[in-house]
Image (cartoon, rainbow, N blue to C red; front, side, top):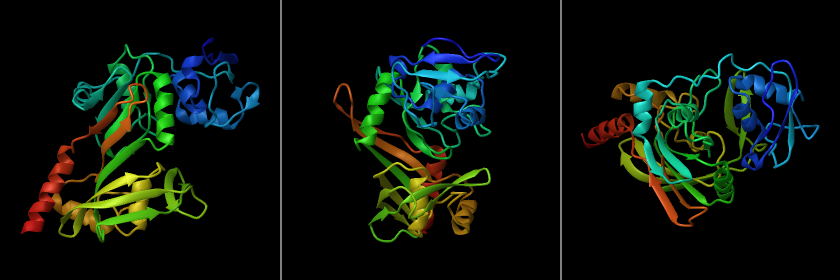
Length: 318
């Protein structure tokens, strides 16, 4: 790529092979270090950013040789990387559960956003870029909600990122989640309900709607714990908040879900003395795009989730 962003003049960046296939918004977030995400999305919507002299959407996929026009924009005064506390660095060092020359898989802690923005100064990907300075091309392969723990993939090469994302789009990555809920009936449920993203004020919410995108989740009972069930969810599609909204729609809302849960679940967690969204990305299974070997990775439950499970088991036996 050529040309760096400037606060007083338009710049033009030619996309190289390493950025081929990347979304426009993700390219700008990386290229315009220090510029708030809200500002980046604003200049895309306004048409100030152009791709090959044409307006583009944030979801536009860039191609090798494309020329991106970037308006005059002030970046952070300092290019110094964000500070990562010793506690967070130590915590993340213990969450690496898979590594090869192309890919990291971490067991993301609950409460840690996958990226900064929307009031979050530091997310997982920003912290990893500080902790692995020799890794120049770290990119999130997919996302997890801030309060969801478990398996998250981080590509070490952009070329591998594109391969893995294509595999996901083709249904070649199996994602299984564990959740705690109330009201789950039977042993297996399939929820097929289209999901629509909406904005309520500054908050993003997802609702079941005929106008939404097709969405499928398969649920399977793992364990009965009195009035609570430990359930495994397998994603047929990967929509925002899919498991949480499908669970609510099916009448078995997740425990600890501030957005889609209920008062009954809140009271139960209050009695147990542990508060968290009871959703964990438990496993990933896929055929490696380069080596073609089968990869299966499981993320252990964290201490809070384990303590909730232990308390529920004690109550169910008493």
